[in-house]
Image (cartoon, rainbow, N blue to C red; front, side, top):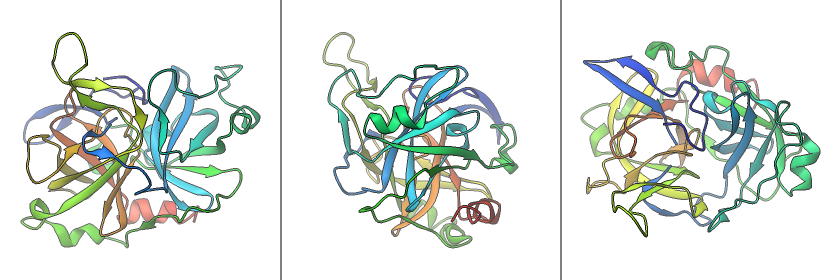
Length: 281
C-alpha cells in the first residue's frame, strides 16, 4: 500500500495474538468534508529519496505541527504546509515540483507557491515499525515563520487515555481528520469501493476505540459499524486523533488495502512522546 503518503516501511509484521500484516495509514473512509471544523489541521508535502509524498499534521503552536515520524524521517529539503480545507476537486493538485527532487523543496519554491515552509524532525527513538513496544511514530514540522489567525490544538495531558481503557474504550468515539483518499465506488468501471484521490480535501470522521496499549490506540474503522462514521486511509498519516477537544494520537498505520478495518494510532499522551515534543513547544 504505497500511494500519496510515505510507505517505505509499507508492509511490516506485528506480532500480536496472531501475525498480522499492517502498513502506515493514509485517508478518511466515509466521514464528511471537514470544512472549517478543524482549521488547525494541515496538509504537508515533502520529498524523500524515493519520491514526493503527502501526509496530514496538526498545528500545536504558532510554529510547530505534530505528525507521524514516517512522514518526517528522511525528508529532503523543506516541507510544504497548507491549511486550505479544499485543495482540488479534480487533478492536478496545485503543488509545485522541486527543481531538484534529489534535494527536495527549497523555502523559496514553497513560499513562491503561496504555502508555508518548515523543517521536519523525527522522534529519535522511532523504530520504523519494527518494535511495537517502542513504536514512537511521532514527528514535527517546525515552520520558518509563525502562523497567525489559526488557534493551535491542545495536546492531551500525560497519560490522558489511560482513563479510557476497556470497557470504556469501545464506548468512546474519537475524532479523526486528514487529507487522505476517500474509499468509495468509482463513477465508472468495476463498482468495488476503492481509495479515490479526488476531491483532495480535508475530511473528518469518528471511530470507537478498540484496543489501547502503552504506545498505540487502535480504533474500529469498519465503515458499516453504526457507532462511527468510517476510518482512516491513504494520506491521513500523521493526522490528528481528537478526544474531548484534545490531541491524543496521530494516524500511524492500517491493516487492509481498502482501509475498512482496524486503524493504529500513535499515542502522544505518553511520556516518551511528550518529553520529546516539549523540546519544540
